[in-house]
Image (tube, rainbow, N blue to C red; front, side):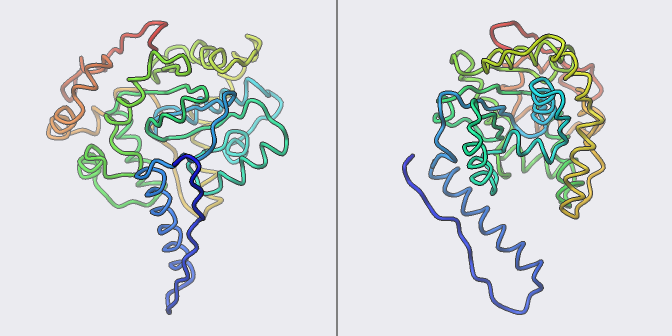
Length: 305
């Protein structure tokens, strides 16, 4: 299967529909085809090299924030915004990934710095991965906010939660996503980083990722990268990308942890704990198991974080 090369779908859609609607339909067909090939059949998105470095996470778990910090630490003069960041650190499971990867090869960049929201796939262990994890309640609340404001999805928080926990969206459920990567925590090519620890000491977690990737960066660059990569700047980056694509996005939920308590009803929390409670407890996040309770304090150590 890894050697299987399948051409992209370019359907010919005829009829009297407006071009925008036709393009949207074509894009959705292509996306469904790619997901079938890569998610169901397990065909790798790319050939992974031992020097490849991935920042991986369930959506809305600090992936973009970490990439901003890596970019600013490695190249302080570049001052990249999100559109440029997508060239610097391409998303492998996106439609323009092959083009971006070719550009990286043309410039001879080693290591290739990449990002993905893919669930665990064994072939990704061929490179080095920093897996970012976040309290699933906060991640789902933030992802709902993102999809409503960025993707114009019309769905309530409760309905989105129900469908997300059932794995109805592209990257599956939070609990399955995190469990797949958590089981690899002892693999030498995997470094687990908690979003909450990034909030507590971003410089320390950035340093851990850089060291894991084998990237030598002076301490003053690390401190500079943290200062430049604020939550406000990350949100502005998303807004800039949305504007370029003629969409609207007012920013995320503002970062932080425990904000699920402002959004979850008692029924939402019961549903979440039913489906994802065991994984939440495994990670140490479940001490705040009721709406209105204090935020969970995730216990971490140098070997498992």
